[in-house]
Image 1 (cartoon, rainbow over the protein chains, first blue to last red):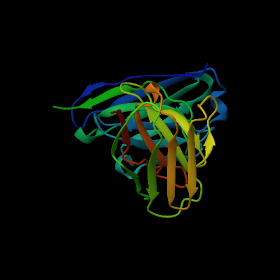
Image 2: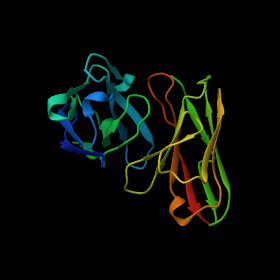
Image 3: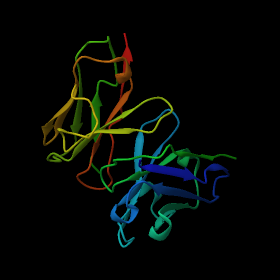
Image 4: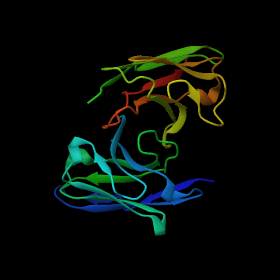
Length: 116
Length: 107
């Protein structure tokens, strides 16, 4: 069974940083592009970033470019999202998902709240 | 960026009904269109890819169609477990944008 489990969310002040993690199991993690997708409270879905199997290619939505960094460790079956210079509008549930452009499996998400 | 527009934003229907949700892209995306179902408090579930291909395990009452800019998701014979939010998403080019969602409610 495919499982994706996110962690690292929490309450942070504007301008602060957080590092999200996603641990994968039940599939060959190193064979898949991976993505982060977020959902602000009561709002729709927004793709945030993706990363190629070997980490050599990464793409970001414009609103997070220069602030967020996606990375992965295939030896640990883990995906990461380093979030710096956080803004109130970054408040959302952050889900990791398998796939780079189509998202086949999703984790339950971790809530990031940016507030003073 | 490619804008995805869904209609309606909400829809009331009864068990056994047939419903159709429409998704329009701001430019041609060929058949690079996916559909997801999301229930309250849960992660989205991948339903349909490449506009019309059913993900494994998805009931056959779900179907998708369209190409270019106009797409539809049809659910025949609604079941109680189908009442949820539905999102279209283009996988043609980054940023991979979603529609705003359609909330399907029980009448």
